[in-house]
Amino acid sequence: MKQLILKPGREKSLARRHPWIFSGALARVAGDPDSGDTVAVRSGSGEFLAWAAYSPASQIRARVWSWDEAERVDAAFLRTRLRHALEARARLLGAEESDGMRIVHGESDGLPGIIVDRYGEVIVLQLLTAGAERWRSELTEGVRELTVCTCVYERSDADVREIEGLPARSGVMYGAVPAAGVQISEHGIRYGVDVAQGHKTGFYLDQRDNRKRVGALARGRDVLNCFCYTGGFTLNALAGGAKSVLSVDGSAGALAQAQDNLRRNALDADRAEWLEADVFKELRALRDQGRSFDLIVLDPPKFAPTAAFAEKAARGYKDINLLALKLLRPGGLLASFSCSGGVSAELFQKILAGAALDARVQASIVGRFTAAADHPVLLSFPEGDYLKGLLLRRA
Image 1 (cartoon, helix red, strand yellow):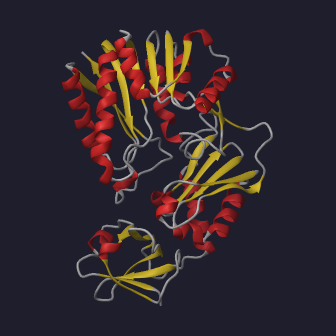
Image 2 (cartoon, rainbow, N blue to C red):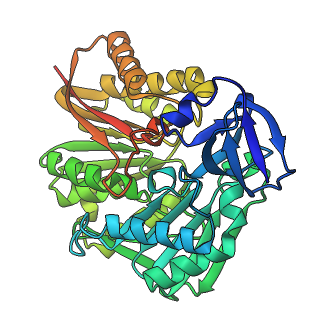
Image 3 (cartoon, rainbow, N blue to C red):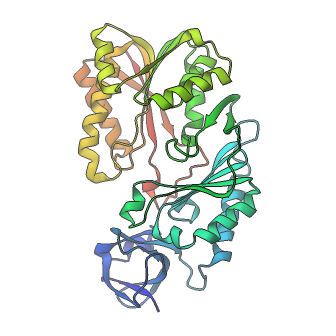
């Protein structure tokens, strides 16, 4: 039998149902498993602990599929997990709220390394780990049948694939992308989604509720939206009655799609200004120009994929938040986000406190942001709580 035998005392995290097994916890590997194979994980005394997917190239040497020794990891097992994930979301989001939803969220749905996002009739599938790759055909077929979609598009092109010793993959797995492109509606606002080249799977579904909340805060305010991507916060601010919105991003392609989204929703283009620029440099330029705003949104890309990058990320977060606080008018609001798994909510709050101190402004937390409900966080897997945000009010 293919097995991982743990060192004495290293089964404690598994006893707490944490689904990752790191290389340092292993005493030995038995049975010569291949990448992606299902292995039995046992304590040093031989006690069964879990069934897991083996990944010899990664520091996370295995990811747990099941804690039940009697269970078998096969196509039927995966199909059941997929069905349970769909059922869990059946009442989370009404069709009138959005036709875009995350329907599988990796470890939190008992499917480590697997992401499934729905954009209308198009499904985007990410297979990010060796275990997910091993069941590629079965997962594709299960997703296709259970969602009754017209297209399954793969976006297995994230950096974690390289860490897993896997090549990047991207392209149509089933059906065809609609000739008119992929579109979704969210809280009455329509978006084009680039499933082939867009960030993540094409869109930031996790910010759905936060976009709506920022829109409700924007009425009558001059807004600055940094790292605006395809304009989600911008469109919500405009729809919410913002006086003006300046949107900044370093990608010309993202800005072009954002402006397409503006036209798609027939929002007032005169209140919208778009700027292709490095956000770090532009924040300094706006400061030097004496610009100021009533509401600022900072939603940067991931600065720290793991805790090892936290120190470097902290400098980046502090820099942009310090500058944003200086640009904020008294009584103004700053909605600041971090999607870095390596930066905890506690550390993020400390970074913003330091930014306010150095900016010589007084600010208070008046709200907190997290990912939408279709991105659940397993209590035994705090690493899944990657998106955090604070709403600050400058005194």
